[in-house]
Length: 146
Image (cartoon, rainbow, N blue to C red; front, top):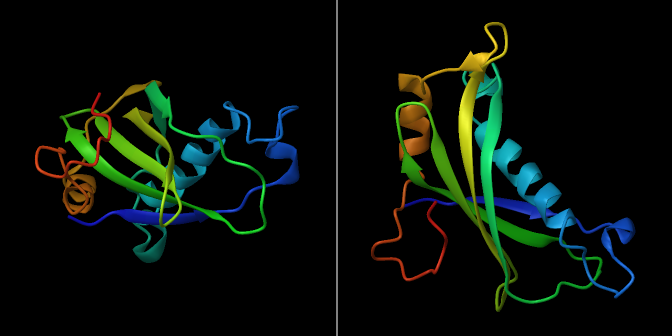
């Protein structure tokens, strides 16, 4: 099973009054990693996959330990834990080589912006996502599955 790897820079403005990255900022980090992951399919060959839009139906986040500002980026690993006909669940770990800061999951629904309604996952999208599927049954990673 492959994982999508995203190196996310930390910004000075990400910190809160307590000197660590604010809990809300982690949602932005997840968004950056998710967009980087999902749009890997579309731009290269002019594929329309995922370019029509998607909406977040649910987020679930476990804050494992505080993350303080530093100049080195944090690694965000993403993978698919569940895929249905019209939704998918992406799991994440925000981490360094030796520690995990956040474990999270997001339910994403492909969306037809023109029709203003959810749509099914296309065969091309499914084939792309299938390479990143791990239901966690044997991984022991502790990632969330929504």
